[in-house]
Length: 287
Image 1 (tube, rainbow, N blue to C red):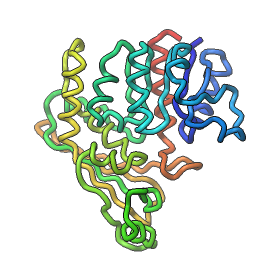
Image 2: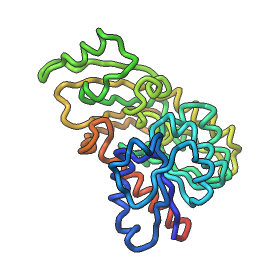
Image 3: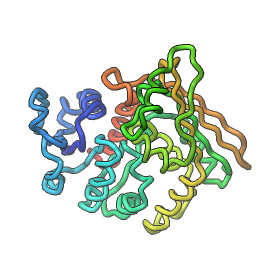
Image 4: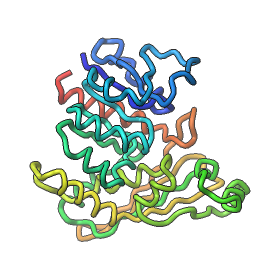
């Protein structure tokens, strides 16, 4: 049996628990707890495992075989390197944390292993193969979501009112254009996918390449990816358009993902992708 510790128990964590029910019922997997910011505020929730205050992460992780992060970029930056440093396998949902150079190096330095889930999009195997062959020069992603999912606390009154006033039939409004690390800083709950795209299209390095070299390679991939984020009043699903070109050819991927029924800011596919990646990790571990 593999003991699993959840870092976070929001939309993704609850969806993941449901998706892992077969493994839990067969006794192949056991969730030993979920770390949350304030368990006292969540007494109305009654999972089959304890909710643990996040500040006790260092103690809780010692009892886990695998840590699944589903708490958001800020928590992933703080606790992801700690999980890896404690020699635990980490499944990372908030891929945007890798845009931070310090957190990135920590999560690539071992001794634990890092599994990066692409969460919200497919087709990355194709782009990864082209990138590893040196076949991509330009990579971009345009993501469109409902304006309500893109309103941020840092926005001024005029910007918030402009987005909130968008009505069906209005033209989509570009709210961001730039690099993935800039995007994740401004829209942490919405653009993990852009950093995941950079991860998928990073250059090929030797298997024994040092952590610093692997971190720098991801940094170069982040510099190459261009991000555009649109507020679309007619969006019923989150949509992503990826363009990539270079000596290997020209590629265009279009996807439309349904949001989680309980949170329009979260892709419904994220928990599914985490569950798949976790199952593959367990298979490699021989669980």
